[in-house]
Amino acid sequence: MSASQLVYNIFFHPLASYPGPLYLIASEIALTVYSLLGTSQYPLKAAHDKYGEIVRIAPGTLSCIKPQAWDEIYGFKKDGGGIAKFPKDPAFYDEKMLVTQQRTFRRSLLEQEAMTQEHVGRLMEHFENDFGFGEDMGCVKTGVYHDWVKFVIDYFFAATLPHQRHKLWPLNRLLALCITASTRRMQAQHNEASWERVRRRMAADKERHDFMYCFLRQAHKEKLVTKTIEAQASVVILAGSETSSVAETAAIYEVLTRPDVYKRLNQEIRSTFGSIEIKLQDVLSRLPYLDAVVKETLRIHAPLANGFTR
Image (cartoon, rainbow, N blue to C red; front, side, top):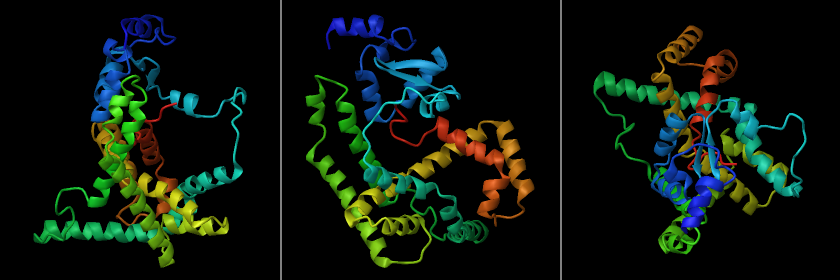
């Protein structure tokens, strides 16, 4: 990168009026390196602590943590105007909506309540036996990731490499060497493993009311071909792998570091239910503060590798 490009990025870029650390706004290199190392959250937090809610974190990138920004940036335009006219493929759109609708469909969640209660009860039984009788029932036995979860995490890192290298011209060719044959092989293995799980689930044809049951039921109604079902269902596998545990960990951290929030949430839950046998429909309708905590967690700690860019 030439000196003139650095000067332009710092002083004459359209985003030059926004504050930010010099080493971040001068070039894409710093943020890309942090992203590849998985530590980009640290310089971003330091930048927001110093400069405020809107910070420039790369020559052409802003980071905004204002609560109102979520609706302003990702929501619909209130005037209904200024929307780009993108060409739309109705079939492709329906396939994508099939995934998002079934993942958030309230009825499918309620149908899984018995299965959820079974796992919660089993988990509590394991804890009770371990703590009460000194017998390890096998929960959290090894203290390491399950092979499948580790595989998914490695896959996400592998997918980050080609995304980041395009930001660093003319170094992108050098970074391409980092995407080795083993990395590409790992991506192919993940895809095949995901598709194999989907094939086994389709072949089982069980009346098990999980997310795949709802997805497959709707897919058969739409008469989607097997390859399309495999491709769309693999998104469900990725989305439900480590993202849930990351979001839950973030929620617990945020609640425990805010005594007032913890006190109010604790009071709401304990005053509503007297045991662990909580009906899902009651959770959705009778715990508004818990619902707010979950939504705020997803806003400030989006469980994605690179956050929500736009």
